[in-house]
Image 1 (cartoon, rainbow, N blue to C red):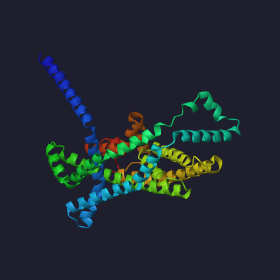
Image 2 (cartoon, one colour):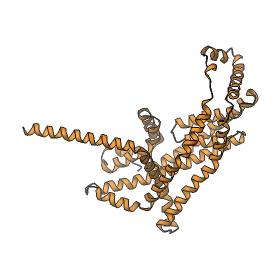
Image 3 (cartoon, rainbow, N blue to C red):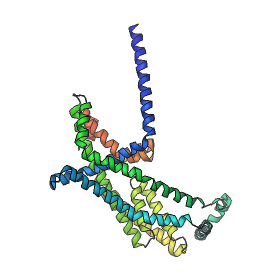
Image 4 (tube, rainbow, N blue to C red):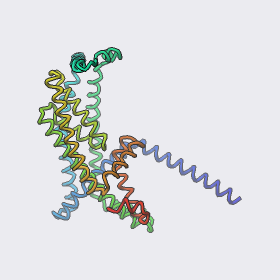
Length: 363
């Protein structure tokens, strides 16, 4: 009887636990915006920690002054992006909102005809393929103004999110010791030292990783901008910015960025002659982007992986590939931070496992 009673109690306990977890997940889904704000604030606080350490230890600033200076630096960087890109984007969006879509369709048709003329030399006909698929009649660019108007509305709604993120970041940086003190009280005494050591190591590694990632994106932005300016591409700032941001997505992002950059380059010269202007510009930009990616893949990324998270590039490639196959693009973006956390936890709690010793020998 006692065994049956224990089993029934175990089943009831498991059901209650599952229900509680479901309720928690539902509540987290309902307040996902706040969760995103906290994640962004956590990343900013990790990036700001080295700056605060430098200001307090090297320049002997008071903690509150160092936090304020760091926050002002973040705000200035954000405003720099706003003043650099938003006016350009808004101007282009306003132009597109009153765009003569019929004229754009004519330009695209003309571009297709030029491509068809080049392919005809090799006994290929793009025009016949398009006619057979009836794709030309289905092309309708009336959606473009609506898309850009929606983007502008979305950007205008980011104000609350940005303000909330900076507000949370300020207290993460200012009251970090208080948060750690209260968190320490929640830990079991036997695991307290290990957990705190893991958190300190994770904080250090991720701080260096996010700072290194920001530097990598900035370098990619500068190199891409130089390539575009060399070949006189219109809208070089916007294209370079988009290409740099897409590099956040490991491996796939740079490929998408290169393709997007070439397409935007071709569209910026859509009214020009295809053979003399559009094709040479596109090929030149493509070659330039490949050079930028070669520099990034062989210098920037290995430097970040080896110095920040102490992982071999092949090891990172396997982790990112597996994460992408299981969870898609977002998994690829979060793969490195999550894998770093798991490595640190493994080293602290399972230091005698040979496989973990092999993976964490440099941490």
